Image (cartoon, rainbow, N blue to C red; front, side):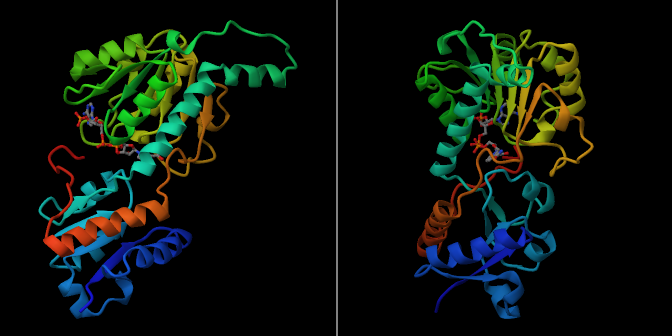
Length: 315
Ligand code: NAP
């Protein structure tokens, strides 16, 4: 008898459609994927694993025997906030392709800042023909806040491209060629020494508002910041003040407190902000579906739940 795996999602119609095509194909021979809305009462009762993407928590609760849920996103702050702590285990998406895509984005926007593109864009608008001193990548220090699956890969990619890289994480880490720091003192060191600061940690109780006025004031004069993590990690009013009054020279922002960013938000027109619509590393349905299939296949064959989120840490 084939096992039914519910797919619980309030994602957009287009996203749901893409997943409803990719998941059954990847899981064929492993299990049958069925949208929550199509499940019979019996199928709801039998389900021990579900695939979720922005699920309605009430629908997850309507699957009473769930052992774990497989998220289709890498960031799970919504699930940790909405699902009860004694509810199903939460397995987030960890896809090597996503680490590759994020590393590419970090490198692209670091090069954008390193090669002064915002400044030359302004000069073009004003028809100013003027070159500026070019620093070598090794003369630029990039500070990576978060050294997990994505941050570590991005830090190593920057290092391979000649940048001098500092890293920061919650616990002590060792990465070849990267000066790794941790803890409160470590954060201060990375803030004070970085020319470009990249945020790539999860949104948790501990990281919410972590980068505020004090932290931004500690940055180098003219330093730039890239936020590819989550909006609420960075205090938006403090960021605006640091761009307007110093020390920050530019910010590349992909994530915001409220998404889509409201049309009235000052970031849209700020001369020192480059704004992206949360595109730095989208989940790729083709590779992610295969990872989900391997996780669920392993569980159905041997009962092993993949590594899950530590609810006390929040990631
Ligand atoms: P991960 O593997 O869980 O790594 C998280 C890293 O952050 C770890 O190094 C961890 O330290 C560090 N960290 C967590 N809490 C910390 C704290 N309080 N202080 C200092 N460091 C802390 O996560 P990931 O896969 O790299 O993903 C990171 C985040 O990227 C996701 O949570 C998601 O929000 C975001 N993301 C954004 C996009 C986008 O398109 N913009 C796409 C995908 C993901 P330890 O190493 O000590 O545990």
